[in-house]
Each structure stands twice: as structure tokens, then as C-alpha cells.
Length: 307
Ligand code: GRG
Image (cartoon, rainbow, N blue to C red; front, side, top):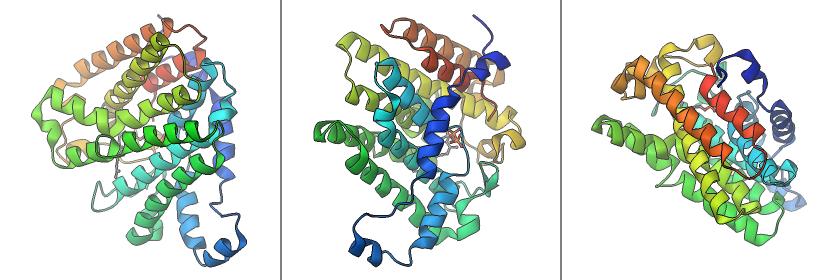
């Protein structure tokens, strides 16, 4: 297998999907079509500015790109899933805004820019995160095609992935030091905190275009593997990454005494674990009935990324 750290593989990242995501996100103004409701929202421009500041600050858009690439590999036009894919990026951005707050990780830099609370204050940053979550739900309800069955199915997936048995529950476990319980506890915490939102990016495409059961199981196993891979590499980059490339402070995990794949296994073993996870992800893709080039490129990027 080619070394995925080579620039050739990086160049395979589906930039055409990333551009579509970026264009869609920049078009979001969070206004309502109803004139009276819009008039009542007069004065909330500062809130919308804070939301758009963080949402449009850059980022790899790996979750929505993963959603669109999955839809594509299931034979659908990626545009068919765009509102829900974008909703995941809104939820991801809310989690970053809240995670950066002084009450959580207390970070000043994100995506190479001052964090939302540094620019707009803690109070507005909390509200910007809250509103991004609500607007994500609205996007699915008002813009996602496929009918009520698809919309409710996607909302169910999103709420499961972000609630107590998902991202927020994982963040709670992390704050309470659950990762210190050893390898299994660390993996379980990360599966919730980071893995679920990555995996749900695949799951929403399965709601839109359900494949036969065997392929469904393979997509789900791939989704879980990519979430794990992403987190192992995140831990490696927090030690070995550069602040300039990451666009945020590095070394935060160690400073906060967090248990990570590198603190638990050492850097060399963490790199091996990432390589093993990447190989498992690629093997799963080989089992899929349809084309999966973009999904393979995303797995390569999750493995080889420097930011
Ligand atoms: C609900 C407050 C709250 C937090 C949820 C996801 C999360 C928990 C916190 C974010 C902190 C963090 C750095 C987690 C590690 C993995 C991760 C989400 C990294 C950032 O995601 P990328 O690399 O970022 O996709 P970009 O900027 O490319 O979108």
C-alpha cells in the first residue's frame, strides 16, 4: 500500500465536495422567511455574526465531506444530502465553541483565529453554540429532501450521536477523567466524544439511501473505524503537530493531564495503532459493492493529516 503520508494521497481529498460544503455554509444567514418572525428577530445580528465567525473560520469539513462521499458511493447526488451534512458541521462548530470556553478547555486559538469567546465574550459564545445546534435541526426540518421519514430518521441519528450516549456524554466523561480508567475506558470515551459525530456523517447517508443489510453493516463498521482513526491521530498531533498547521495550541492534553493514546501507549505504539486502524478502514471499503474512492481518500486524510 502506498504511504498515505505522501502528498499524492493528500491531493486526493475530495476538494470538490469540500468546496460545495463551503459554498453552502457561506450562504447560511439564519434568517426566517416569515416577515413578522424576522422583524421580531431584529437586534440579533451580533449573535448571527458570532455564529458565522466560527462557522466560516475554515476547517477541513471532514464530517460533511464524509456524509456527501457516502451518499455518492450509494449512488446519490451529494447535493441531495447537503442540508443534513451542513447541519453536522453546525453541530461540530457549536462543540468547538463550547469546548474552547474558559469553563472547558480555555483555548484562545481555533482554526488559526481567536476563539469565539475571545472575540465576542463568553456569554455570546455560549449562545452562538446553542443557536448553531438549533439551526442545525431547522436545516434538516426545512431543507432536507426525501420526506418526513428521511428527516425524522436523520434527526434521530443526529440526536443520538450528540446526546448523553454521544458527543456531550463523551465530553462529560472526558471532563471527569474517565479516560484514566485504562485502554478500554479511553476508547469508550473517545467513541462517544469524537467517534459518534464522525460516524453519524455516514449514518445519515444510510437513512437517505438505505443499502442492503450486508453493505449497511460494512458502512457502519467503516464509520466507527474512521472515528477511532481520527481520534488516535488527534492525540498524536497534540504532541507532535505544529501550532501553525493545527491553527490551535498544541500540548493541551498533556498540560491538562489528560489520558490520551500517546500518554497511554507511547508515541510509537500510537502511530502503529493509527496505521492498524487505517488498514482496517481500507479493508472495509474493499468489501463495499459500489465505488468508494472518495471515502478512501477521506480515510487517508484522517490518517495522514497534519492539522
Ligand atoms: C459539547 C462542549 C462539547 C464538546 C464536545 C468534540 C468535542 C466534544 C470537543 C472538541 C475538542 C476536540 C479538539 C476534540 C478532538 C477531536 C476534534 C473534534 C478535533 C477537531 O475537529 P477537526 O480536526 O477540526 O475536524 P476542523 O477545524 O478541521 O473542523
